[in-house]
Length: 438
Image (tube, rainbow, N blue to C red; front, side):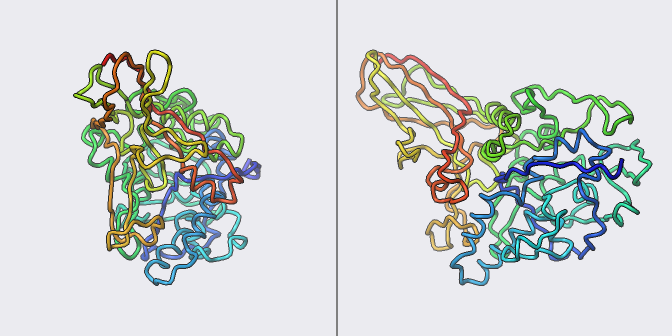
């Protein structure tokens, strides 16, 4: 059974930009100490199938990541900015990085080992014993010696058994710290926080209630988003064929908000799961009367255990779209409506993080991020209010407000050769329609 090889068509992932750094303290490990994921899948078939094609699995095989990362390196002359730009490979090729290649973005992609190309994978995660710090993937490891001596694999069970590898209970694997060590990212030199998903969770009501990252993201399965707005039903089953039946087996789909890359790979199931998650994060509501001329729109992030958007949130696009029509069906007010190219105007209310160069000037390239100029996002468990001035419009109005999501802005997508003119899908996360009389 160990020799079963799982084959697949590798579609590409945008990572959520899943950013996973490694400490300078991380020792070098021989590549032969790590077991390929398909070897694990020979026994853990169901879990392997969930992981296979996930955003973790495809963290390297992502043309959007590759193109944007290489663009970010081009033209840099500041050594500190270059140092940050070069660390992308340690984030997207973690097994490769800790086993010696690639050490930097400018290394030859074609020379990366086959196992390195499998992204964030079984033996990487289950060889973790803890962390030096809860950011930049400063993990501690204890890998085995390959398939002939696989060593100990760690996980959330205190009664697990295996006739192939050792097993050990790991409290760390049940904690948000496991996720946060990856999903908390600082600029290598400047110390600017580039991704604060763990910190956002840490400040949220979920942390106070003891709800960990895994309690949402590793409960989701098709048709069950597993957010704070939905039931988080258990997933009964067994980890391997013939092993103990349990009331819950943690799922390994690792769904975020990305529907673009699954769509490129014709993976309709993962597209739908991403949409289900997005549509189960935020509640939108409008006041039935105006405050003077102001339409009041209330947004409540009750479903996500972190800000919306999260991750490298200067790249995600979440915005409010408001449209009012009169009794004759004529549009008399609109905001946040994309133009024919799919671009947003300056009037749009966008929830985003903007970085700066240290002198107050905005920068798109996070390698240059010396400061945070602006952080307007929907905090977990909090209500956010936006007001839109309708002016002197009178009569009966039908007003629709929607919170929209795109993995990346359309104008950015149009500048990526890898997308070949793709129209980035707009996911309506939440929508409300009311009738107003003015």
